[in-house]
Image (cartoon, rainbow, N blue to C red; front, side, top):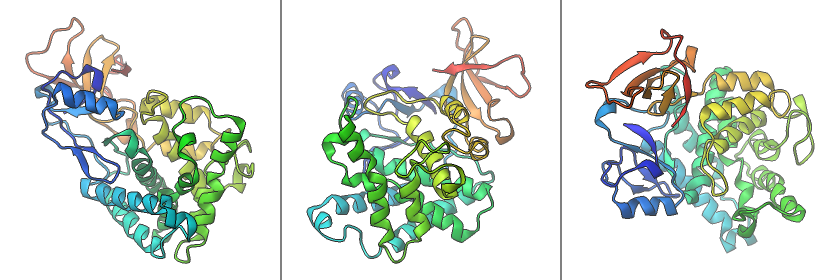
Length: 360
């Protein structure tokens, strides 16, 4: 399979990976032929890329970190929590359910089990979601990325659980932000920005009241917008004043946000997001944490279509954690546009004169 921009899809292409709704259920399933009506519907829902079946890339499968069932359960739990939080009864009452810690301890346990079953601690996130499902899937992705970094740092199970639950719930304060502000296309006014920034404190206030949640998990909500140089909010903390869990969540939050499609901008490629994180090292984020994070992220995920410096077009077939920028590429177009009689692969670790120019 290969990842393709929706605008490049021709009617009749076969969907290779499902597209999820905000509650974790499938909107369009694997194997679905994409008619013009379906393509337009996906466009209306904010979907900008899809995975399609392709004879030239048969056998290429994204390195999924999460099983589909794990992601579905996690999204369903997030959806229920947010729905409860935004309901009238939740606004008037306690807002969070008494079993919040138990539910999300179970959710993150399944995520962690999926992450740890992999031979390498290397992120593989390739799900496609609608704009409406962004809040739910974003929190899951942040939890996966944070868990990977926690494992790389050698955290014990209790530390991983504190970090993971904090990562799943770090943005829960957003449910207090008025919908008109969340959906606004243009720049926020100073007053609107003040309301938006309140979500960090609101999230902390919700989570710290839960008797079965660690206060350190709640600090992920409070501090995920603090910045290493003191330019963040709500307290303008700097450096080591920011808990390491919150620093990890902040890096994962920014990376996944940049690489997700939003209504007001196009998604960044993983390589562009990694470049941004390195540029922000010791300014927004601890540079050593950035280095650790980026060493466990694929710059060119499997099934990504790329243009090579030779003029050839290929699809990423395999990645290597020790050489994240030098994957194996399956060639599907020669420099002159000719389709090879038989697709073949080149290993960029051996072809040092060949570089990836960009994703296409």
